[in-house]
Amino acid sequence: PSQDSDLGCRSHLSINSYSRKNSIVQSGDGTINSLLQELEIGLAYDRNQSMLILEIGKGNNFRLTSEGRTPDTYIQVTLHNLVGEEMTRNRTATRYGQYQPVFAERYLFNIEENFLDQITLIISVINKNSISKNDRELGWISFGHDPSGTAQVAHWNSMFNAQGETITRWHTLLEK
Image (cartoon, rainbow, N blue to C red; front, side, top):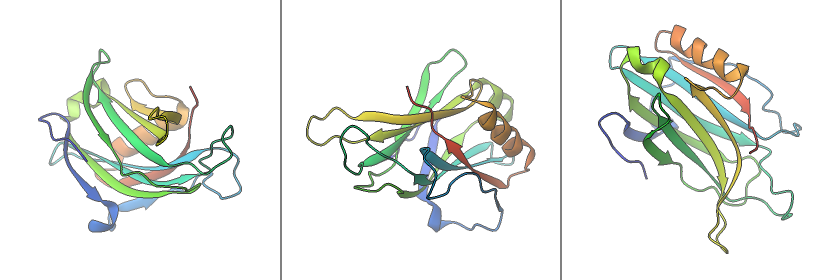
């Protein structure tokens, strides 16, 4: 369920529906034994098409400590401008009852290169609560103008310098 906008997401594809020949994968923590909630993220920037490409890969160790059950999760992606206004919002399909869900979804954002330092990409992992309808954020990370940490700065810079290749890394989620 993606939304199209002039400055936001132009399309949404399954990761399996495109070629991976221009991809570089760097493994991070991403191990089944990790106690941290992590998300595999791929970033690329296509200068020819002025396109920021976000790949949501896999999740690791998603949990609901207070409820004692496996979570039903989706990823919410929001793009904000320099002053914090939301430009576009998208979300993945919900993955039900999985500690290590595979999302394999891709989002394209039409962003001119000179505006890349003025946007913030926020990625939130949300637990869908079908009973009370109050979905709960399990964790988040952000890239770009207002990054959530040094790992996100390093990934963003690697993406910017990769000349269109997808740079994939694991990121530990922050809790609110």
